[in-house]
Length: 252
Ligand SMILES: [Zn+2]
Image 1: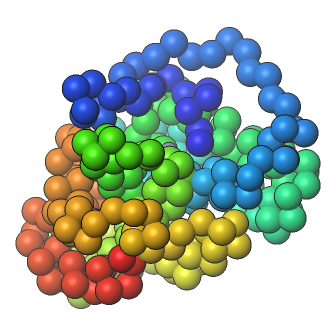
Image 2: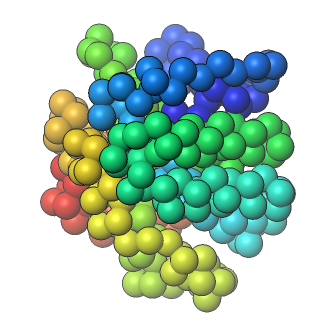
């Protein structure tokens, strides 16, 4: 995940997932031999946390377009660079060599720097992270082992992408400029194939969460933070009711 170099830290307080400002590290020591020999799913989780940036950057941009939320161009550009570099190194990361791992770690660390620049996790965390946090609280309640952050976030990314690509079916203000952002996003299949190549789950049922929890997540996860995302859009406009069945069918 990308928290090593960030200026925020997610904590668990009374079973609730919260994010607090943290001291940024002064030094980072990376052992690429150890990283390259990590279980494949851990590398996949790192990739999942980076591919998520497609969606959280779009959530941020759209919030800026619709509501004038402050948008840090430098942080967004830095994050886009990290994302592009990771995507163009995907083959090399999949091959498991040091070069690929170096590219992935660079992207994850750059993501942390983008958060420092923005002064919040906005460039690195959107609806896909809120869904992951929602599930995490469910595992905590049940006292069960929590799946890797990037694995859950990767699945959330597939949901966010699905929701973005479906926006053209609804009517809303500034639709044209919002759709222009959504059209820049890759298809769900791109993220699904990438996650599969690392042996990551691509259905929530593989994570050991109940269908009821996942369904509730579609309706509740946006409330975790006061931060506009594609999930906020679907829930506040009542579109989630029309979408939940297909999400369950395709992703549970
Ligand atoms: Zn993350």
